[in-house]
Length: 471
Image (cartoon, rainbow, N blue to C red; front, top):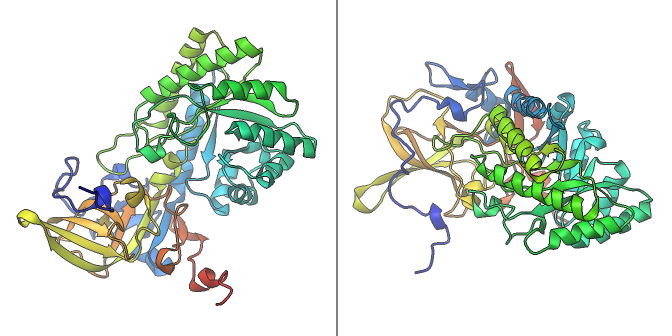
């Protein structure tokens, strides 16, 4: 039997085991909301000192709302945790992963808080530079960099360029020769660690596009070629095992393999590798089914593993870079929608699911359709005395797979005009947004201490048609 094209998102019976019927359908599960989010007796959601209706009155819906204090607090928590945990070793530095969510305003926060950034395109590089990030606090990633991107990164003097393939070694050496410079680089290695995450966000097993494989000898070949050429200065090795990872066992295995690989390279080639990039991928709680570790716990365990594994491998402990993105931006974001059509659908066995349509959808949150991601939701504009009803929040796009929240208990009286809030949408929602069905992308509004600042305005039809030469 062929699989339905909506896959696992196609209607399939009752709620998942982790989703419990709430005693109070108005209550917030605080662990999945920004620090400043709360509801009063009126049932109205408030974030950053502003109510959901007040925010909607200023920017409309759908809208990405970012709790500035929460975002910056999480970034600083990671920076301090890793600085403290690695202080007795060679140190560690946090590079915020811009791909999760970036704008000029967000880059300014990062610059003010003295964080470094990793980017993977010239567009991300330009954005963070305009926000005040110094080039020497930027790492440039990417599996298919253009000559122009490499030239820009080298001319600006970015801190590190992460080499992703054998072909890129020759390419980067040629560009460096044309610019008469000697950029520092890291070599990205695929080390065969199968992180327990979705296939599309597991990035260190063998059968995927990133890095050079240790198993097939490509990584060793890359090291040899870097050692032979004159321009590129190899500062260390890099790996990234995936995203949305909750245990540290996969990181422990990655650290062990990277320590042994470092020892092998130093022994065979006489190279000193003072830097080790361990990527990011730290999980966040989207639902009650997730239980993430605090930054201090992650940093402490990784530091202990690194010290132990380097000692066993007989190499000096390197300076470490990590690249959290989702773990900083994700929980700080909330998306506000306005409810439109509400439709009860009766399934086999008399089971009824409430389909709640909102004025956004897969154009502002593709993750549910792409990864089968799970989200929560709450009515944000009023208190309800109705019982909980198992619901599915869907969008306005012409796709049956246009689902925002697959399973959630909402009040049975949810109705058109209600404001619905979906938490943990700060990462990979705006950055992966599209114009499907010719719909403009939502704004990003930051809130703090009762003040709202539009970081990115709503996209208009004029914006959409600006590149249409017949418009």
